[in-house]
Image 1 (cartoon, rainbow, N blue to C red):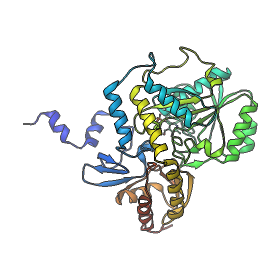
Image 2 (cartoon, rainbow, N blue to C red):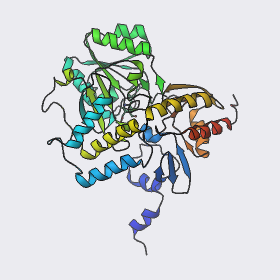
Image 3 (cartoon, rainbow, N blue to C red):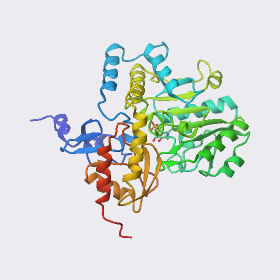
Image 4 (cartoon, helix red, strand yellow):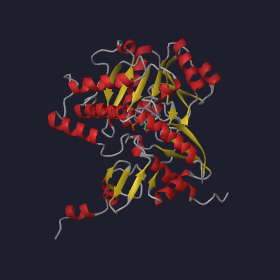
Length: 396
Ligand SMILES: Cc1ncc(COP(=O)(O)O)c(C=O)c1O
């Protein structure tokens, strides 16, 4: 007779997870067993083309040999040590990251996630300015922790904490006169996503971002670019602000930073960094050896395999081939794209999944998100275009 644990091991993990975890996620109707390149192989024998990349994490796709080898070698050598000691592997990751960041971003503080990166960036801005009001942009998403959720648009329904850590207001996106009026000497920070990911890959205009830069500089406000979703090559440059020629004061990074190993980073200038000393910031796992090795390997693979060029070429191909079937137009940058549909994006996603193509939805009900691995190939986009073309016209 199999024991209860043996029996439960054979049951569908969706049922087992539902029995023992808090049901906060809507889950997709398949169970991955393994993955390779841009393909997920499921327990029931399907091979699904992944154009969603686990919420924009899988920059190198799955099983990338350089990343796998780096993690393997580092785990054999030294799996963990905290920031109480300096590490060659951490120093190298920081050197690599500052090297590919916009000029002036020459200091790093390592953390574990996007929300933790934003939490620290906002703390740094409040500490550096002594001010207690933060501006964000309408439709933004910055994470689930207290400060990150406070600057997230429409978070009141799930915010949960009794109060917010600072006063928050939202600049209507791309509203230049509003930005000029709202940014003044009371403001500690303005935080923005150059391409608003969760909102459906909405790309803010260069003119708007330049206005944010000018007004924040004029009033001594810290300008924070949240590049958790848009960074690490996804938008065709290492950071999306580089496509706009904007130099913020702080950049936050996570998601694709470690190619799938959880990690995050706050990048800033040495002038801002000089305001902080021992005890001001901290994180047990931040900059751990495995994460650091993964960061270095991810950046190296993007450089060695010319993936920034690939991203720009694949973006052009999607714009050319995929405004078809239910898709009216494409917004976003690089491989952070929103396909604006003539019907609910959820319906389009479900039909594509029947064709074994995984895409994502967004907070805009008509926008389907493509967050494909940066190693995406031309033939993958041909498949997407064919599947979109095969979809029945809208009945509206
Ligand atoms: C722009 C942006 N910032 C922050 C976050 C939060 O990152 P994490 O889930 O790693 O805390 C996300 C997650 O989707 C994001 O898209």
